[in-house]
Image (cartoon, rainbow over all chains, first blue to last red; front, side):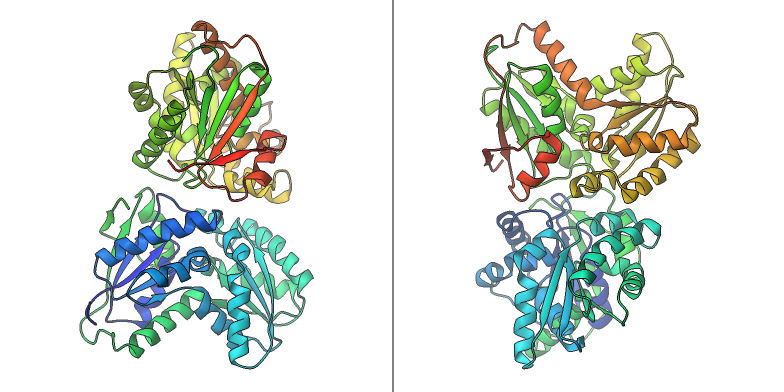
Length: 274
Length: 274
């Protein structure tokens, strides 16, 4: 494992391609190996035990490819399995939760942060813990309101990204959040799928809150954190161009959905059994 | 394996409890063993190969419990894996597609049938084939229009069964069907989840079509077919009361969602690894 080795990224499905998209922009010399566990997607509605088991299988596959770092793109896997993964592998492991929480704390003025995510991510309590830790580092308090939004993932996968149905769904979920925390000024998008719904989420927050609400995207925050982590360890690749290799555990409908998340066609996807 | 043995039922998740519900009503002396593959749910968006592999694992588990018959509650598994399952096990295997198709052919007057289901069920072409076979048996032609409705499963699992969002989603999917086949008079609900959305689907078909459209529920048709298949083979249990044992591969959120599908609380669910 050297600075020329690839970065491994895994996700429950294709949603993590939003993280790949952000990493390709910020790490233009790195080779990325992406694994989407599309045969068992989604993780968001499943138990901590199942998600941890699947995550370890994904990490093992990436290690077998000789990666220098593992990025857990899936927020649910980050929320449920990060500590276990870190304890069991030799390379640095970067999750979605810490970078997202730091970015949210940096962005809030009111100290009131909202988080939306899958059932698993919200149930784990990982974001409130990480937000409180990030706020404590800065010596300022933070108050967190989290809400599970199970229908946003299938909406994004269906490609209904910005229409009256997406808006009605977003309004229903975010109204609950607004009623509970009317003064929140940061909304953390705690799921890889949500950046696709950014326009409708931004419009609905404008409608529901009387002040500006900043949407913080954990995909962006992860790309920044990955660059920092590589620099700290002198593991940056300093020559060549970025490259992406993609593996999935089931190949139904990949090309069509992947384009939506990556922003460009995905070619040469390989199928693997974990 | 005797007439006292249990009937095994498997599904990708908890949706198949709509079939259990129908079977408990029509087979009041049978013991049912249900297996929901909730660790890998859903099957509807996955490939034929993956669905067939998972289905065989579920069937093997049920056989290890000594069942006298296997009912494939999941329409996608029925569409993709039924022939393979039948070829590989000794007990009768009943799927969702044939009973649903027969019931639809019996109900249509115009000979124009609509089918809604998951991406996998629609892509497999299993319903058009079964509907044409059932129509040929009766010596009458049938014309089939099928449409995938991926968002209906997550809607039903979220419990948004009959509100303005469910209605808008149903209207979007069924408008496409109406434009393609304005004279259809039967709509086959080709997924275990759809009976939960029956009220909204009925209301929207009334709004979109100018004549009555009969909704045919494959869960009901399967319960009838299971009773017939047992009678033909003299495998009916003739004494005692119905009993239900439930196994799942992941136990997150089971109790809450199961109640919606079964119509009563589900107790004593056991977790198994396949």
